Image 1 (spheres, rainbow, N blue to C red):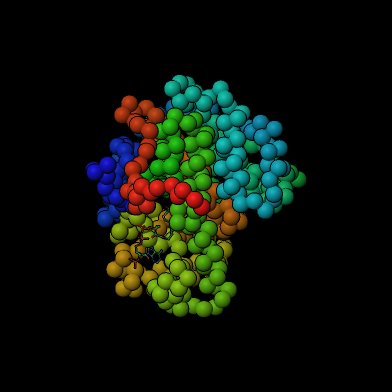
Image 2 (cartoon, protein in one colour; image 1 turned 90 degrees about the vertical axis):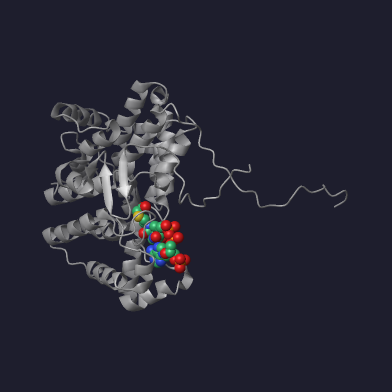
Length: 390
Ligand code: CMC
């Protein structure tokens, strides 16, 4: 129509109203439901933040205890769904396994798909929160060719997840409290980030009145890409390449600036943050704490710090307002915890799940919601005559 404006990549166009997360990209501010991310990360837990994002307020102790209990009661996967994993190759990327299995959840839980029934929406919420970490751990175990463990519901959310990933059928697994605290914090930092590509995808799919499992499976696929959640995996690959090739940080940065083969400094830059990413600051603190507590010396951490220093002092990055983002240091921590590189984006997905659910529900409950249907500017051929002879 004559009124269509082009906004490639949605740089200026708001697609919705939302009261979940506030970001001021120039000032480096991030708030969940009004609370500063620094306070949330310091004082809360993954499930408490999930409640805050989904229901809008901090839970009372009894509300939180009841929520925690409900999530624990839904962790089991149907035995048939466990067998679904054996149809996939062990070389499969765990993000593909994750999105496929979440999509498959809607085949098992047809009793909770109706977006117009608040009880069903509630049940899907609990099922997803409980089962995504189990699916993620099975994707990990599958890639190693190891047996799947049953969830141990006497453990907390994060303890259970670590045990499912690193426990072994034959041994008693002691969960390391340093890892529990650090992982809880990292998951909290990922829980929501307003209209990023995956959350916008969840809302767009949900706007068609598709069920929550289908919408979130689509969000997982959007997160997979290296410019979004896949960046944490790409950062580690980049650091490893710099380390293995011995080319040095300076030379690598030169190649980025010259846009050689289109390479980018992964874990740097953000569409919204133009002074710093407040999450990156908190993650960097965690990286130092975790590596020290575990007694891990990782040359990749030194390379990351040098890269950060060189880039922050360089005109190219200053001019373009490129700073480390949340993904820059997370991979180093996940590696120290024992996760393989291909699991990094899966951890991001578990972190982001409460945000996706909160946005899906906000979209679903808002009577102003309309099916998402962007316009385009047609730049193709004008009307043509079909050729008489060919
Ligand atoms: N390394 C080198 N140059 C960069 C980078 C980078 N990481 N990011 C942006 N630029 C340059 C880009 O080449 C362009 O320069 P020029 O004007 O000369 O063409 C300028 O900065 C603006 O870039 P853009 O691509 O228009 O910016 P955008 O807002 O569309 O992209 C971004 C944001 C996050 C996709 C981008 O900064 C990027 O590709 N970063 C690396 C991938 C990454 O770390 N992603 C994680 C983002 S945070 C967590 C998440 O969302 O998952």
